[in-house]
Length: 176
Image (cartoon, rainbow, N blue to C red; front, side, top):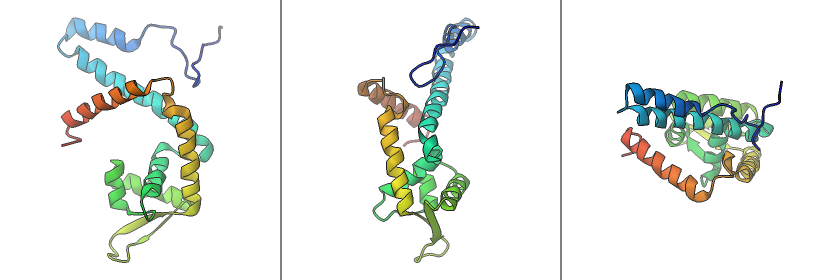
């Protein structure tokens, strides 16, 4: 059995034609008015799988998932290192239960503290610890060094992708 060729990130290089292109061809024969939309959505979903895999591989040595990294980074960006957990959910665009789970895991590692707001005891605050801030900085350096998994993509193309996805987010109601 011959060994599969891999990219610089360890992803296998497909030895078959692009499955999304084949799906587009099939869709075009049956539902031509929907083929481009199907291919766009399928391409975004596949790209998300590939990028998340690369990002998670970079973060693994730090014991972080991308969700945990985002929470740490968000707290590190604030002036005080503290945010209400409800506001974190909004800024991270995730369900409150997801924030609770991520903060709980980070708290058990001593990277985040959690407690009631002194102004409103109904509000729970998450606060990054010095160890959490240090880890966020180390992980950020690693992600920056990796080019967030797309280092070989020119910055201008990354900006074009961001702009195109901004429009997708707008048309699906994520943005005003």
